Image 1 (cartoon, rainbow, N blue to C red):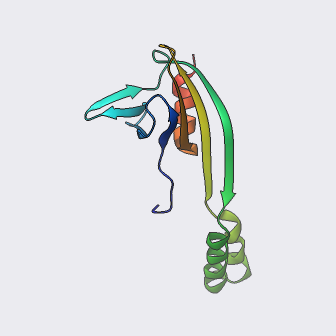
Image 2: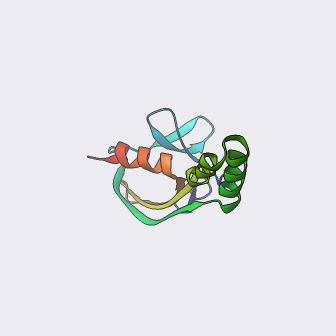
Length: 118
């Protein structure tokens, strides 16, 4: 997890602020103990600007090697299960007219999309 890029606002309103969730509610942490929930009451529009999904070659090779050593040729298939590093660049227009661009992982993106669905 150390290599994982953080979920942040990369441009616009709240630039540099972290994006997170409290279980089922995604939010932008705008100050100490202050959060802007990302839901239909605050978000007017959401748009996916860019999506990337990469498999780490090193991860796939390592998993394949270990799998083959432990389980033979069948273990080599473990290389195909290497973790995907999904990143999404998301544009958000807030109800008050402010705009932000977020860089988030796949899990948080799906949570934001479902939370903001009207």
